[in-house]
Length: 132
Figure: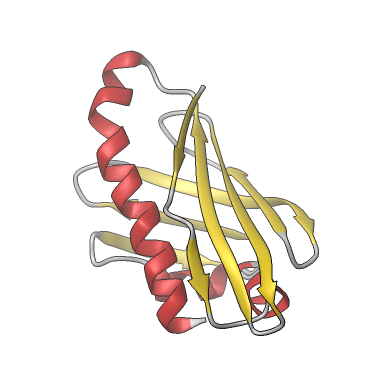
């Protein structure tokens, strides 16, 4: 199993506000970079394409209010994966957020995907800091 983590980022919102934002996939579209196309979402599921990579579907599998969301593969994807969204309270108006992508990647795919996926996760947390 390959684990790819974003940078830890401080968001100027409470963990509850960040959790509520990330608990709804309709909000995720605002975080996506321009390489993401064909976005479709409901509150609990989404699907999209990443230019030059793959089409992915995701579904919220587990929520622990105000500090953890587990997202998993849904529908077609070239490999099994989960995405962990962790929110830690720094104080009443700040949360430390980190995303972690866990995937079953073969060695060749791992070599090609680690850097773009790390960049992708860092874009998401950076945009979260600006939007949420």
